[in-house]
Length: 540
Ligand code: ADP
Ligand code: G6P
Image 1 (cartoon, protein in one colour):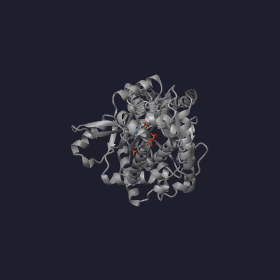
Image 2: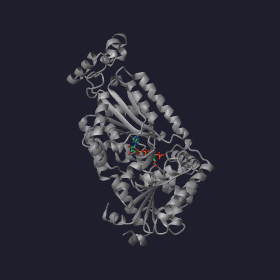
Image 3: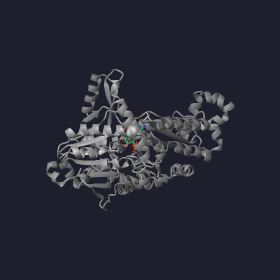
Image 4: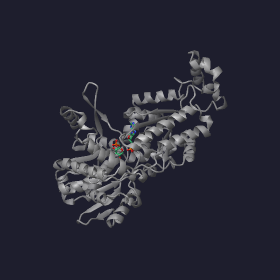
């Protein structure tokens, strides 16, 4: 942090978000273990919180307390406190209305331009207000004059206004980790004015891109009749002003670079390379290199079932035989992707593009393996259940249609993995397919590049996310265009290593300069510049 940031650190920073950076899980022996949460918000701000002792984090426990005894709830609370987190416990009814309902079935689709999926329900709106008040009651007693409260994301858009009433002398910031829609979409929300008035309780409102800032300003003009200056200041009717600006979030570049060299990540990478035939090992290798032939011979000698039977009876299923029509000198390649299973991530479209590659370019048969890490998310919401069924089906169809005895085109992993194996997957990928239909920023694209520091590896990136504004040397695609995505994937697989390194170096330089840490410090500095100047002394 800058000198100014350091002085500010003497007072308290209270981060408030729906999801805490950790969750507490019951182990088999009944004890409670802490696990890192996935999602852009947790991975970006988690390290900042961990590194600053004057920073506390308030958020939902992520669980239904009715599952636990009072004693267990106290153990969970204590486990969070040991990590400087204050856990709020919501009832099943509040979780259904506030989290699954208004946050994830109304605001999430609306903000991601999926307005046809948005549900408008007065009952869930009521729960949204109730839980925002609950957060206000939890934060207000601990926020002292001179402190800073930094509220995160779309779950807590009424909280800035509620804290403004309750906490004089506190600087209030709010950051949106998802896109902000145009007025044409936002105004369809029956409670759009209440939401805008709530969030304007903050001194500083941050978005990932200038486009989202402009959308917000246009909504404030259309729905509240308020103008914004070129400096982002919006003069409010109560005499205060709120400021809006763009703060594109970064990643902890060195953390991902370093972690990709950890022994676990390296082992993961090696395993993936063996299974996909990129290095000799488990798989019946199709390469004609000396190493490949040796591995192939060893595999035949070991008496595999297919070497005795399939060669004679089902040659088309045997890679070594069926590949006769294929360029056998072609190097084997690995495609990777890492997502929460969310309909905004474009996973079905991406699978269709991968299937089209196998159809249109049969020479990739046996030579390209796709590692698809997609962890189920928000499983109580019906749209997510439908998506899971759709992805399961598509993976099954593609694997069923193209698999050979010793080659499966898609390895589909639905578990949530910790950072080391995730970095191993990134590092193994010759190509990362990052194709959200809509995304505020998308950190996965950035993490992939950090794991390819000083190496080749190609990024196929959707034009529909904030990251595309910064990572302009990637293969940029419209994720809805299956043909063009298939062609971009083909080009990325064929890219020459020198050219790949050249592109990566340009993008990596930007990522090293704008990290998650500089992002946090930059937002907080800007907040303290626009918040009540009379507080400056107290923040020292
Ligand atoms: P979102 O915030 O919508 O989930 P981002 O791409 O911005 O999307 O951030 C996702 C974060 O969560 C990244 O840090 C990524 O490494 C992590 N992540 C996403 N999916 C998984 C997964 N299946 N397993 C482990 N980590 C994941
Ligand atoms: C996105 C949102 C976060 C959210 C995360 C995971 O990154 O911006 O606010 O925490 O997804 O979603 P979940 O519903 O599990 O918290």
